[in-house]
Image (cartoon, rainbow, N blue to C red):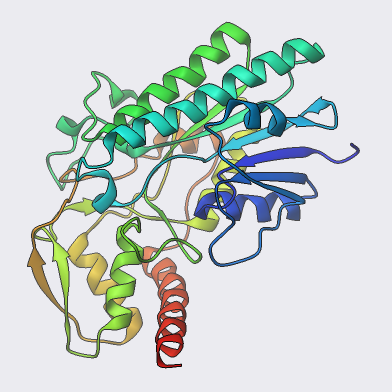
Length: 337
């Protein structure tokens, strides 16, 4: 094939579907694989396989492109969701089993294909998460420590985080033992249009935008916990740009990809209310909240990739809110009809 080729695993998901669009815009031939198609748009992939990556035979077939290996693989496929899915501990076995199985299948079958064809050119990106950082470094909401080197001694706050940490080491082990070129990013709360916004797997920005969109002026919305837990949130376009730079680099160390604009969940609600032009009050309820504080530390990614975020949280929330407000409106009109 004359074009550069890329395989996007998890291409029906939020980040994966955006990555497909970006790669196609750069002239790549792209195959996407996922259990589902993107929820809100047609996939931009040249070819889309709707199937289960836990099936080792499917993975073997997906990795082969016209008797050759792909130039690049982007591995976003995972069993995941927001705090309501990850921290209730009701899905821990599925989260660990499903995600680990996919990663083992991808690496084992790539090694087998490389040996069969006598090549080793395929660069593999793995999307890890800030959830792998130790809980004991994130107890102070004002001073969380999420430097890359703070990962050990390990103590993630969820089985999702433990699986991410295991899979990071898995990819690095295959790099050391089989010379697989790998790149690893620890994502910090990626958000934006075309992400899950209802149903229990949505992240905090989408959930809050949905609640504000459904509320009238001077209404109240529910907030889990006391709203004083801190986070940073990175807009999807900036995530994609940083990931592409990482893939083009020679850096094999796991890198944070996130924003350093740390806010409380209360402040996140205030920002969503501001862009909506509504006065919103908060009602605090019990719910899973995760660690007390988390914020990306971008010192290493600046040094390695010469990359930094530029969009403010308010700018990103405005774009996201308008898209979710449109989704809410469509849902209301459909119910009326």
